[in-house]
Length: 294
Ligand SMILES: [Zn+2]
Image (cartoon, rainbow, N blue to C red; front, side):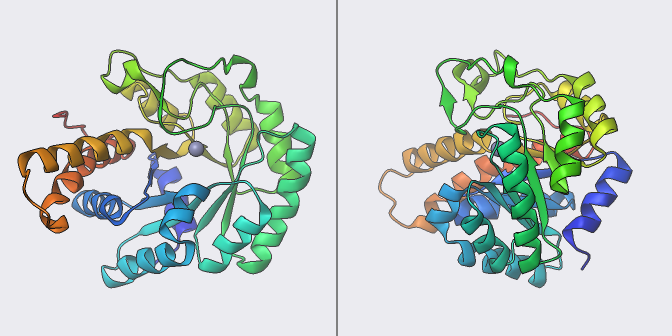
């Protein structure tokens, strides 16, 4: 089995992106893994600090590793939005394939200084772990927001991106290019879409010469996502769309069997609902025709 950096390199050469899906229970893992296997594309499962707290850092690492080994399938694990070195070291020790070290809330000089130290410390634990750094402002909270934050002042520039990557030696960069964490209520129904600054992505890619991640991909215009990948995005994060599908699937599963108490008879509704979203996004990110049906 080749490693995560090999698959990332291959995706870059092929002009496709690897889908990253946040999970906070086994049902979500089943849905992500099932969709990726059906399409036979590599996939990245991610957990933020809060999600790791709930599932267990070492436990999810063992679980994902068992899937990768038993099915000989490229499913990898990312420690999403890690805000302290201690949590980063914990994930590196547990065997995560990549770590998002996010100090983007700090002034840029402090972000650079601490991210550089963290890259060295985490690679000392596991030299093959990939480290992602964050610059700019894309908001927080993968949930439904009532109003849109003003993120226009926090957009990343190619110069800043280049300097950040060179100074910190991160493998992957997450810039602010019009993307945003969470979704507005109007995005859940599809009436509005997030739009991306494609020129900015292309400029950052030319300047930084690193792998690029797009965070907050939920609710983004499909054509913008295609263009963003063509402009140099290598990983796309989807969380809120999965959470919405998780809730809808659960409500549906409970409503259609009001007297059922057996979890494995109720939860397949959730797996199906989430799997449809994951499958649609993986098709898009991998340059395939997207089947709309949801
Ligand atoms: Zn994110």
